[in-house]
Amino acid sequence: MTADRNLIIVHTEGFQDVADFLEIAQIIHELAPDIEVFIASNTIPSSATRRRASRRPTLIFSPGTLLEFRPLRGKIYAGRPIPKLEQLARFEAAGLPVPKFVQITPDVVLPESDFGSHVVVKPGLSVASHGHHMTLMRRELVHFQPREAYPNDHPGYYGPMFAQRFIDTGPFVSHHRVLTLFGDPLLAFKTTAETARPPLDSPHEILAKIPIKARRWDGPISRQFTWDDDILDLARRTHLALPEAALQGVDIIREEGSGKLHVLEANPGGNTWIFSKGEMTARLKAALRVDRLTDQFDAFRKAAKALVERTRAEAE
Image (cartoon, rainbow, N blue to C red; front, side, top):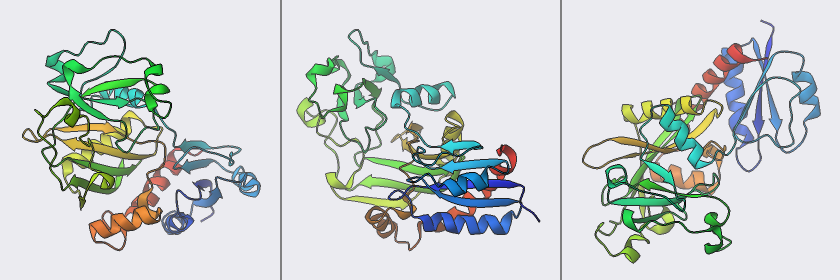
């Protein structure tokens, strides 16, 4: 069969190993001889690839923002940072379970009926992540600070801060990460702190130091694969709220007691391709006791099938 469509997978050195995409490309070649796959570097113009791919309808997939590579034609799915407040608003509009949130302005009001007794104060910048600059505090103590009140290395100096209802995942803080491509789960795991957090009636200065996410630099953590159908389904639905972001690293928490799920963010910037990130990948494989992270859901075959489906439907 002669190929009548193209798929360009854009590789960014340092963020993905090109070998991952070569493996996916080989699977696509076996599944879909009607699609020719090109692997382009994101750090050079890749002029020859641009010209060859422009001869047929094309789909471009890049986990992150396109840099030096600029296709001449085609439907583009490229990651980009989306401010957290915009993500949350779009989740809410899509009917997803999101903890109540509000930007902290000079006239901010936090009703107890919406926000409970405790909130997490967070930066709204899309690049502020990994649990940095997040503060647990009593709802009534939240107040507006002008940007000048923050040090120039704090996200609050550069963008808005917001308050979000605190969802208690238990004394051992935990969250789930589900990596999806066009909504299909490729990898899902839970991270849990192994050190109990202080009680919620602790003094303010103690609350302010409590890690909101389980992070290895705050103490020992454990990781287990996530197989829960409700978590995977919520990650699929999260994609529909941000459909332009093909690759998402969806963070989900489960409330202790009620078991209710809440989605926190989708990390659509593209820095979530965890299958080949050097030491980070090695630590995750060791924690999950596997040789290949792809084995949980046969991730590369799932990715290949999703890319085939999209290319056939949307190449232009």
